[in-house]
Length: 277
Image 1 (tube, rainbow, N blue to C red):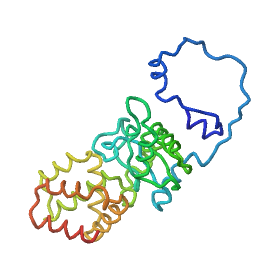
Image 2 (cartoon, helix red, strand yellow; image 1 turned 180 degrees about the vertical axis):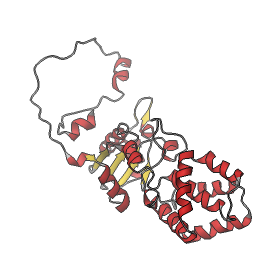
Image 3 (cartoon, rainbow, N blue to C red; image 1 turned 90 degrees about the vertical axis):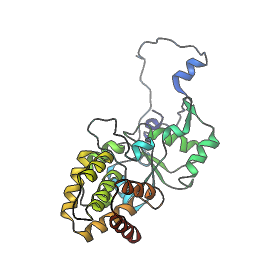
Image 4 (cartoon, one colour; image 1 turned 60 degrees about the vertical axis):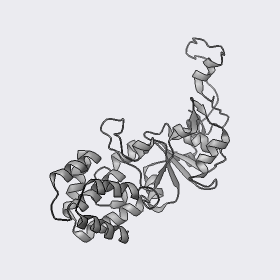
């Protein structure tokens, strides 16, 4: 509600830290009030465009790195380790986004100290940077937006559609590696490496399916079948660079490849690819 009021031009708004549970815990009075039926107020909404970002905005910000995109979901959801809670929504991550779970700002249902909150943001973005907050469906992103405002950040906005919209609208677009999710990239790399001897064994297939959803595997495999070896390498390079794997996840990728128990020649092939990346 805080963010909605701000987005529609109502600035005289505050948030009760901890909400109704903290109010009751403090022993303040409560009542079972009837619905408000009094006179309407005089407030007239005026959309503040800088507070909102939409799908086209997030695509531009992701591709051209004009903003720092911060995802409020849990690290497991961000890294595609668990399914999305919304039925039918694929796992994934907006390219060029970073993760700050909204729970990292909270302790026992209330905000941590301003110093602790500011430290969490300073590790990801400078105070003068433009930031877009995202999450699963635009709710917990507002928790990060509030924390950022408390920390002195001014150029902040929320992508209301968040992963629910982005993941739906970009589903199946395998011809553009820069739009791949980390799940799709992982599947493509593992399929590529498993075909070093021109065959993918049942054991290798089973392992890949243990790491990614079956629908992701099938979608990625169809694209892999269309690509020649050069195209595969270029696709991986583009997707890895998009997700900034230099900083975050190369160790995890190597771990997955090793767990496939490939022959030495296959590991050497991946190492040659890594050098090109």
